[in-house]
Amino acid sequence: MKCFLCLLSLVLALCAGAAHAQDLTAAPSDAPWYSLHFQTTAVEQGHPSFSSPMGNGPNSMKARGQSDETTDMTLFAGVKWGDLELYANPEMDQGYGVSNTLGVAGFPSGEAYKVGEREPYFRMQRLFGRYVYDLGGEMQSVEDGPNQIAGAHTANNLTFTFGKFSVVDLFDTNKYAHDPRVDFLNWSMIDMGAFDYAADAWGYTYGGAVEWTQAHTTLRAGLFDLSRVPNDKYLATDFGEYQILVEAEERHKLFDRDGTLKALFFLNGARMGSYSDALSLATRTGALPDTSLVRHFKTRMGGGLNAEQSLTEDLGAFLRASLNDGTQESYEFTEVNRSLSGGVSLKGTLWNRGDDTVGLGGAWNGISGDPRRYFAAGGLGILIGDGQLPSYVGEEILEAYYRAALCAGVSLTGDYQHIANPAYNALRGPIDFFALRAHLEF
Picture 1 (cartoon, helix red, strand yellow):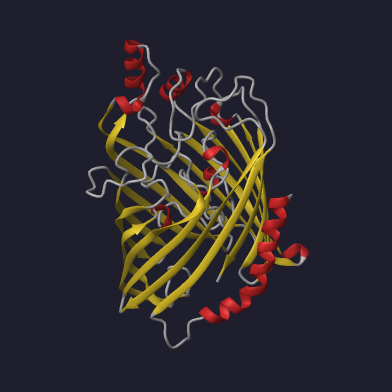
Picture 2: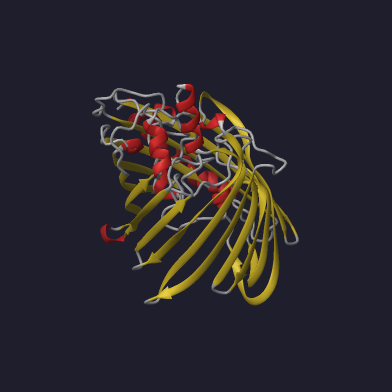
């Protein structure tokens, strides 16, 4: 309750100052050479005690009732010379995910990084450039927004993005489920669960991508740095550990409603450990299996489908399905080899709250035979590892949220998640997560 009152007070204060802040930063219409925006998001999330007859392992979600919080503040600054745009996103971060962001493969907060600090710290999360080369067709306006400068481009164009940013800024995007600051929170909702995308421990990387857009289709491809070792703070900046990405996007009308379908493929090349090799070594030495002891340069593939569809003026739906090679350890994201997620997003027009949003979604995550045996023998992964896995079953996730728009740019969200079989362990849970999220943007 104390955390709820603190966050509510914060939101009301932000709401009181939001209109003034917007006036201060609004770019004059005759100077579209820059863009300046800001956001801050605070999430308080916790769960009551749950059943855990086997106790807690090294990477388990702690069974006792607990809560934790995260806060971030981001400046989105950009300038433009001709068709070249340059952006910088300095950010302040603070806080932890519950159980130090461990214990569930489909972790319940996309606002929680794999690292955390009790005191605020600063990082330059994005520092990148974008160049758009027009190829003809109908002129389309570009609205001013975070990392977007107002202007216009032809419907057919080539877009080059390079520098430091997040892979999922460009790939696997979805209108209804992609931004933990304003829509769903669970990792398996906002991204493909089996998309092991290149990233440091905060979710960002170095690389470049090119997008070829024709009126109703886009083909994008990219090359990005992986971490030096799996789930590391530091990137292999020489591209010695790399990811190749290709995504095809098709935009259509279904019953006169907008829809998008995307097909994604990724290839990771890096020193990674085989689950079977780790188990073989453990059998010979009598130790617990550890993929870090058997790493050699290998490639690992995966991909998936991502769909969004407007159903009515206020109702939209999304669906994602993904899989990857389950013989090698997960490198960056989380221990998921197969995933299916979907849901709906509804605006509050029916009850005269058109700026409010209700979201309801579900996800299923699974792992292959090799990682099952590895975790059953006591192996640890990026996010999971109970020390044993006596009864494997897929993770089942249900999430519902209500986002209330308090005033322009300010919202308060209540979020509920029910996660059965956390870390694929039928003897643990289920866990009910409750969260309150405050968000300001201008």
